Image (tube, rainbow, N blue to C red; front, side, top):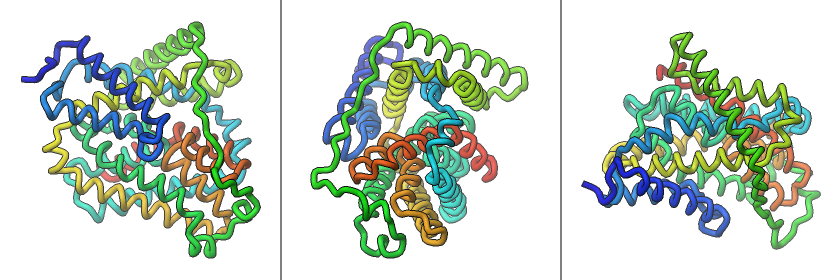
Length: 378
């Protein structure tokens, strides 16, 4: 028995939306900037469910994961204009490709070194998707390879701490003398070193009701077509990939119109934070303790291999260290944190390439993740 029952949708909605709000609040304050708002959303949900406030299972959680998450994917990909990404990313895109390869290599090596049981191949695919794209890719791959809600929650929780480690690594690498000697950087040498750094103010999307309604209607249409096609082909479990492909097709057929949309990405992020809240509430802490340790070490191994591959390639190919860090960041932590790192370091010319490569990661991460999972037998 729990304080809030699984059928008490309004009370559960209050909890889930409240957790999402707290995550966004944390992201804009020191708490979230030093860790991650997503981490606190998940931990809050875990605490509430394991102390008997909310249930581990509810139709509300199923609705968010089964229906709202597919709607979020087009909303997050409307700005993925591939021509613009290729045009503005410059030489950073080459290093980004190497960074993605580093994630794949780390996942494959880790899979063979660490016995994670039945979840192994699926987790390898989900982590690969997440660390070439972002959280939305992690979720999309997890759905495509049919991970259970418990498996998803455990995998995300184990990976959250390592994601923080990845962010800290990217921030500190330019300050390590040995790294600077092995991989020189003209950009770092020439950049203006501001003692206080550069302030990164998060600019909220302006609320335009016609934009939001149109973006949501288009997302519904994309999902309807994608799920219908997947059903006709008898591969309904891969419907999420059809959603991704159709969203990218629409984004690249009508880039100017979609680039004018306001509020679409923010709406997609709200849905994703609701999903993370549901994931946290559905996490059984005892199951996490039993299974998460192997996944934690697996995530650490992927991170280490990723960074070693990127730095080795930068050394061999004489890639600027700043470009290598931005490319690795686009894969590991996504466009916004990467842009913040570049701006804070004074690498103004790398802010846009970091964002563009991060968006490219959103576009390709799901496919790479599913391919790795299937390669490893997931």
